[in-house]
Image 1 (cartoon, rainbow, N blue to C red):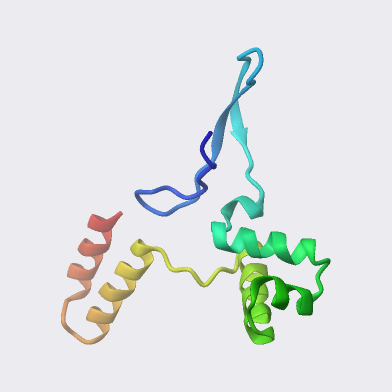
Image 2: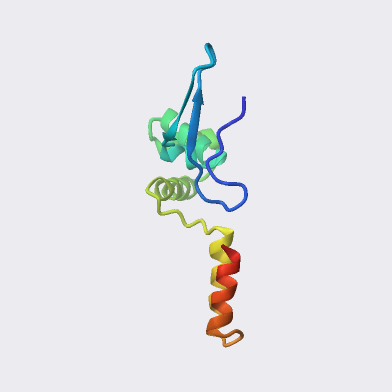
Length: 123
């Protein structure tokens, strides 16, 4: 069985679950189902969160378990908390491309009409 992916491999946006199937009787249920915030974490972030919980939130224990420093534990924890709150610093490739277009516009390298056209083409 494969791990559920939570982001579209083409555009990087969130995926939704629309079908569930029973392993035993093959009953199929189709609808829009929600994934938890944890389903959107990377494998590394999920492993860190699991380790943190197994260590009962004791940062010193997490340091020992993962062989990383206290500041690294705090940084990883803060990063995961931001992601769970939906305030991830991750920039999608389409957002990055839009930023490049806006930077070019600001520098006068392209006109507003050209910028608008490039943004429309990128959707």
